[in-house]
Length: 142
Image (tube, rainbow, N blue to C red; front, side):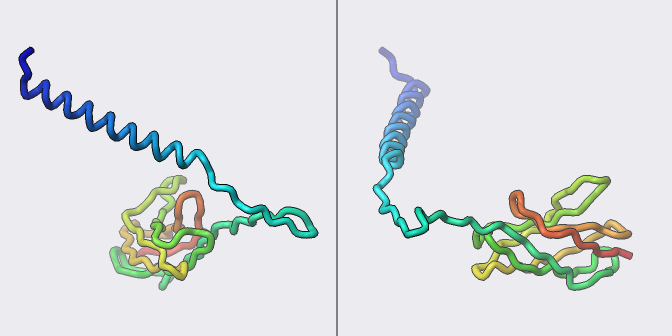
């Protein structure tokens, strides 16, 4: 049998994929077997975890700006993971469009985002993270 460079690369790739699938199968098996958790029961019955509803607030630093003038949008979040990014969206022709303006959420749940808008007139804006959105606010660009 003649072993070519292409053949040896193919054998090496199959070996790497096989090793990765065996490693993943091992971690999936341990992940599929959950560790026993003690159940806490009170007089009222089993305790249920209440998930906090995710919420975002947003407040622009100004209500009116010149085209391409920098302003800030600040706010707080609850129920969202620190470090995840919030993004500014603008309503354009009846649809929400993500603008290239995003920032991570701080550990205390706050964020501050620098924004420049060029679309003149009233701009309807909101801050989003995943499926959670802030109330709509407007900034007029003149």
